[in-house]
Image (cartoon, rainbow, N blue to C red):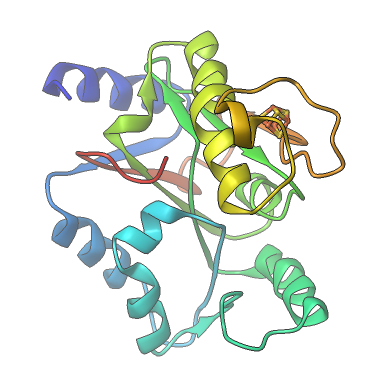
Length: 206
Ligand code: SF4
């Protein structure tokens, strides 16, 4: 992606009191996160293929933090639900996003709300990791990206029985398996230090 567009996005985010930080390499982004993992702090995560691709889960598991790891083997449904609630009091919450507009608005879609809720409220700080493939022009393109790219792929990944897993595009279903239950748009925040967007050049997640 062109440098001008990334600069435009960072300026737009700043107007919304959100810091956007561009990393030219995965190593720089990973080091930024690691530098913030002070011993003893609690760190939660929302589902994110981007974070997985960057190998950040391994760093979180190896560091001397309390990691609210919902992917640990043999975790029960009740234990996972408790971790979701614990995320609200985390020192840092890490997540991906579904789209971000050049106007500085962050779009997310969620099935049960466990990812979008702590992004909005609870954790002291939130790092949203985003590949430049998720940068779009405006709200309309953001919704289109979610409906016609992100949600169908995610529904398929989660083995949901929804029409989009066959068509590859959203058919506005009313299925019990529907993952498109909560759309959120972040377009500002009171505490300008809380949410930061960590941008990385390239295709990450979907
Ligand atoms: S509303 Fe239904 S069909 Fe549309 S993307 Fe979501 S799950 Fe798929």
